[in-house]
Amino acid sequence: MGFELGKLLAALTAPGNIIGLLALAGFLLMLAGRALGRWLLALAALLLTLIMVTPLATWVLLPLEQRFPAPVTPPSGIDAIIVLGGAVGPIGSMEHGAPQLNQEAERLTVVPGLMRHYPDIPVIFSGGSGDPREPDAREAPVAAALLADLGVDMDRVRLEGTSRNTWENAVNSQLLVPPGGRVLLVTSAAHMPRSVGIFRKVGIDVVPYPVSYGANRSERWRFGLNLSDNLSMLERAAYEYRGLIVYWLSGRTSALFPAP
Image (tube, rainbow, N blue to C red):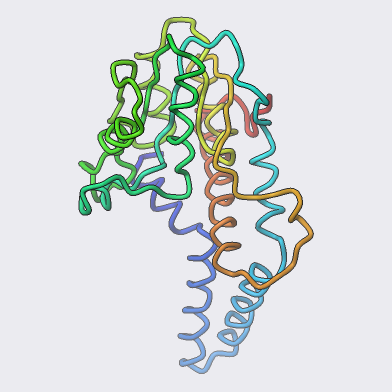
């Protein structure tokens, strides 16, 4: 699947967009005097209520985030560290003249500690532009600026700034890792199953180091009124499940749902 087509599919199948389209279709059908319009509006309202009140988003996100447990201590026998992009907004960073972090910030903030623990191995940051409308808005320069501000030894950091998706992260990182080396892979916990499957597919031996958790097991039976956070978590989970299926169908992952 092409990069642009993949982004379009992601937008069309995002839960929030689906609910919005249901509501819009229902409204237009009601204006046309069609009874189906009321049913579609009711369905959209029901879905929003379920997302807002129930821990549905937690139930859906937890299997992704718990698939690869975080190591209690950094593992031994590591030859390189790969940090995947997604933690900064390059467009906002360029506009405001400073790195703009998002909910995936821990992908970068853990790097100084890991570099202290592994003082002699290279760190590879892989991240280009994930927005087909802004191909020059690349993450790598922004990440480099942030890491420099955090005081890391930039002579140890290798930047890969052409990747637009996780498949390209893996393919392009192949050229930068030591041949046959064991690599510590840093990305968000929800993204880790898909990332591990893709990196295994291209032949890189990765050790998962998940960060940036969004769901908590202690909250899996907690009901409340929190539409924005719950919808954000559900969108995150849906994006990853969709990616797992698409990459599996296209033969670009080692398994449908990679396991340790």
